[in-house]
Image 1 (spheres, rainbow, N blue to C red):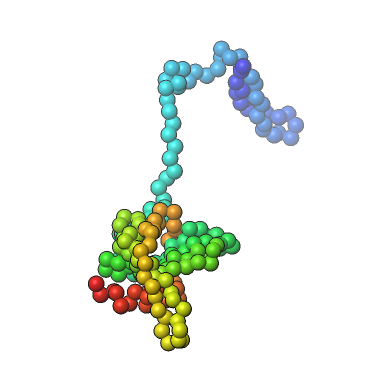
Image 2: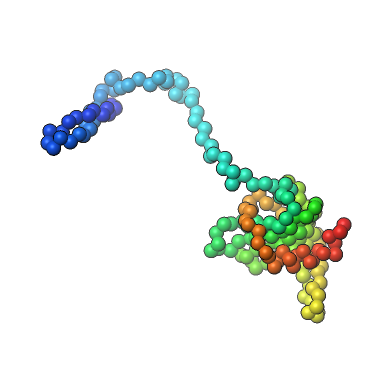
Length: 171
């Protein structure tokens, strides 16, 4: 094998400059400052740069306020969305899955990036149009590791869920 070396040459017509590659025999190749043995033991580790937007706060570290999380940024396909309000030591919200059309209200306590001690509120069809009734049941923890924060907006689902737990907010 041989290595190419670039050599500048003057073109004879129209005073143009061009480069010509000449091949050198292997024994005339430029020497590397690193020995063959050192090259064999070197390892290059590449890691992506840390971008501020990649650092997500945990649910537990969020300030009191309204939040919205989703499992996908793609608007053109179904997604799971969680809207919630963090107030004092409680999180109350709605968990909607647009793939299945199911949604439920929940209330729990934040722990790291999870909501634990979940109580689920199931809406009971009202017999009269005056007041919605709710059945409370234990629920499964919600993990936020694969959910992405979005700007919070006014949500009818969130408001409905806040009213579901209204009698119990003063524990």
